[in-house]
Amino acid sequence: MEIQNIDHLGIVAGIIDRIGLVEIINELIGVEKGEKISSGHVVKAMILNGLGFVSKPLYMFPKYFETIACEHLMGVGVKPEYLNDDKLGRVMDKLFIKGLDTIFSIIALKAAQKFGVSLSSSHLDSSSMHVHGQYNTRLPEVIFENQQIGNTQESEELVVKSPKEITITYGYSRDHRPDLKQFIIELICSGDGDIPIFLKLASGNQADSSCFGQIAVEYQKQLEVDSLIVADSALYTESNLKLMSDLRWLCRVPLTIKAAQSLISTLAASEFIDSNLPGYKFAAKIVSYAGIEQRWLVVQSQERKASDLRKLSQKITKAESKAVLELKELSKDKFACEVDAVKALTKLSKQFKYHQIQSSQVTEIKFKNQDNQVETAYQISATVSQDESKINTEVLGAGRFIIATNVLDLNELSNDSMLNEYKAQQSCERGFAFLKDPLFFADSIFLKSPERIESLAMIMGLCLLVYTLAQRQIRTALRKSQSTIKNQLGKSTDRPTLRWIFQCFQSIHLVKFKNEKHISNWNPERDFILNLLPDDCLIYYQLAS
Image 1 (cartoon, helix red, strand yellow):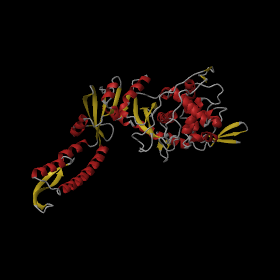
Image 2: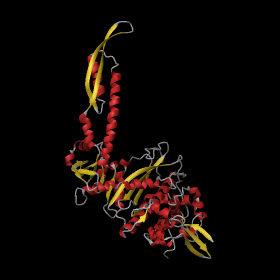
Image 3: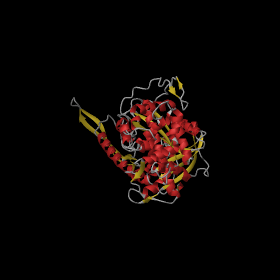
Image 4: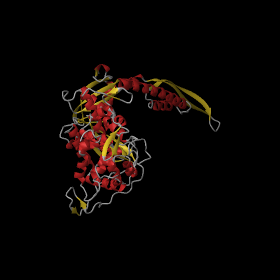
């Protein structure tokens, strides 16, 4: 009798098969004559490892597959020892040379088509990933010679030049690790199910505002539909908006723009109307910026307003204490004349953000200098009071922000839809949280070259693609059938996380006995969940042929 683990990996393998990922990879980068395991199967193995949530680094890769049903999940004849670090490294080099952006986009778009993912809206964001090491080395210019191309099995002598690698360096760290070098992941997810459709790697010191417009244009060229590009304020620059003149976009307006700051601090409360989204109000304005007519939606969040007002109260109290202390120090200074004393007070008062001088007094004093001669000097004392006009301006703007779009037709994009689309911007943030989860196998990256770091990051993106597709499939099936399952707290839900589904599939084994295969620890709950997924997943649990 032989017992091997399957757990939730049958779901992962089934989604990979449904996408056709192995075949796509092999078609793109080729199959070498006589190789024991194809590049597509290596990528599948890395995704299985990545979504195994076992935190095993790459050098323990073969060991990991000794504990699971490797041939059952990967294919007949695939042995754990074939999945060694040398093979993984060679495959990652091939992926880099072919073009990681191209590979990911082809796979993601085909997956979106097969799973019926809507691309009516797409969310763009970026985040940093820190690494350990110096990464001063790179791949040689000539990588492969006598390489077999595609499925032709014909030997040709080739000289393949490596594309330009990113620079792994120091930059603004979203991980709060400025001591470590990093690279940037630029990600676009669908508004339908948080599915990653576009993934691009950039140098660790690249600024979002310098590239978001170009990324949006590049992404749109790959789609067959006119997708609404949604992003944060990094997209809202004059150069980006002009670059996206042929695209539909929606993003937040930075309050560093004077017109935006003025609008949120002067717009009367009576101009706001209630949104369909509870706790929000908005007021729409047509404005022109960067020569582009657009709709600005000034949004007020009740929850955020309460938070902003609490912070404002704390700031006012702190500023008052600081102002009183500075006035006390100023009152000790001696001035040659009254005019100098008043000038010093005026200069200091200009630094007050929330306060103004309430009263002041200049006093003439007599004192003896070092030569014991009597001199006259002037000292100034003053009290402060709150500057109600400045405070009221911030009170009025509390909880407010502005989102903008170049879609002016309310029938095409209503004000409520604008707000809902912007709120859905968290789709990318959820993707980054997944990639940075400590349980994920690439949280801390220890590879030899920037090129392999980039390849591994693309594999991480494929893990996210598989994960979100499976999660979306289960939620969609539950919603259509008006069914629910129990969550971690035992409550019914039609929006379970795939991580919880994975937990529900722990301790499932493939049992081989007398040349027969059996699945152990099966139950009706697992049967119900699995039938929400494509038939490709059922095969691995022997529920379909």
